[in-house]
Image 1 (cartoon, protein in one colour):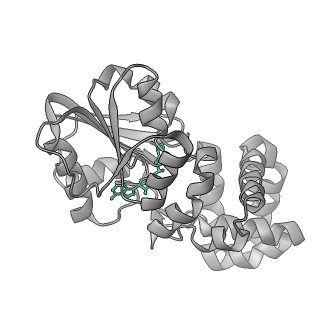
Image 2 (spheres, helix red, strand yellow; image 1 turned 180 degrees about the horizontal axis):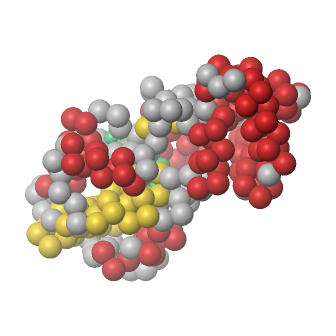
Image 3 (cartoon, helix red, strand yellow; image 1 turned 120 degrees about the horizontal axis):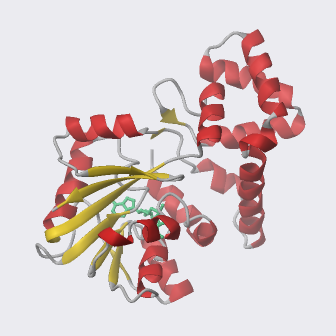
Length: 275
Ligand SMILES: C[S@@+](CC[C@H](N)C(=O)[O-])C[C@H]1O[C@@H](n2cnc3c(N)ncnc32)[C@H](O)[C@@H]1O
């Protein structure tokens, strides 16, 4: 999956999306771990860098995507360094805290690449500092529905593109979604029908309507600035690992990286590695 295309295409509307999955609230909750000077890896448009600067905490941002780097400068005047989390352009022990935002370690299915991100973050972090690595998380009720309809499959792979399929198809007739769900889950027709009706009845309670309207609003905004819906949808990740706390524990045990804590928030899980 070419996630770089996703970041580049979505960069012009990222300021509407970025305050999730390790946003400003999570930063504030973790403030006890955050000592200047801070490096934010996967800084995007620089939301966390700017948020920390507002608290007089000096932070440097780094991002692999040139479009994000360009837009951070154009929209906010923030200088983000273009670079890769797996090969940080800094000398050893240059920072006291390294935040690895969501969209970096958590998007990786490849253990070797994940190790290189964590190793590099630990290398540039001073003794007594901390690396905070974020893993995106969906609200529990929405996650449960996504698992039922196969947006998150049995192997815990998150097919974000399927959300857009459901959105388009259900706008014509919700029942037309059933064959898709059948293909994605392999469940019996009757069971899908029953579950789908139940989901339809609890849409507001689950928060799914709010989530859908938020995404539709983002897409309308994108169209208003000349980005086509089909271009946005075509590059949405079709297979991301979705990791619960236990999966993250297993992942770190598997790659033999020691951590001191795993902290769960509403929209992300953060692994704390003390250096
Ligand atoms: C979800 S966005 C994070 C934005 C974040 N909320 C912020 O404002 O600080 C994830 C970012 O990680 C970047 N990224 C992904 N893989 C990376 C890598 N290997 N090295 C550096 N940046 C990376 C993407 O380009 C994207 O801009």
